[in-house]
Length: 190
Image 1 (cartoon, rainbow, N blue to C red):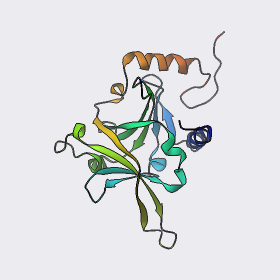
Image 2 (spheres, one colour; image 1 turned 60 degrees about the vertical axis):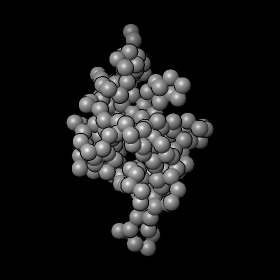
Image 3 (cartoon, rainbow, N blue to C red; image 1 turned 180 degrees about the vertical axis):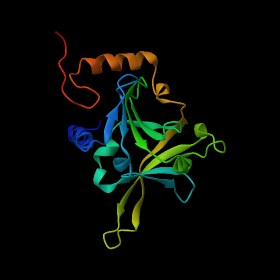
């Protein structure tokens, strides 16, 4: 994370998703994998630019803090209907978090056409957008890519997001955290 203000804004965003019941976690698999609900996932757009390169649109209200996360790439999980934004440690490739955005399977083809394109040869960018204040049916995009050269990969299921050892470590930390999957406080220890 680039700075404390961005970290606090991102935590506030996650907290608002929890409050609105738009964020879940499956601690039995990996508590570092966060699933964003349908409504909150619609805050993002997916498409191709004029060079036919895939992008994820980020709302201007999410700037700059959202792009200060150490995003490394995206993992497309067609089985679950999620696109996971992966934040990783640059030096070790250790998964910090995978933020799963619910995406209709047809829209996933905007990022990588299944069976047609090789995700290993593609790169993705983040582009900023805002709704036109004079016409709410129009979306305005900036020409600038706020993040680019993010990798794309296809995964069969979420267990492929990190190693078994990393997932086991995350489950242990979550068990000691004092919260459950619905983010309610629980008694830890004896």
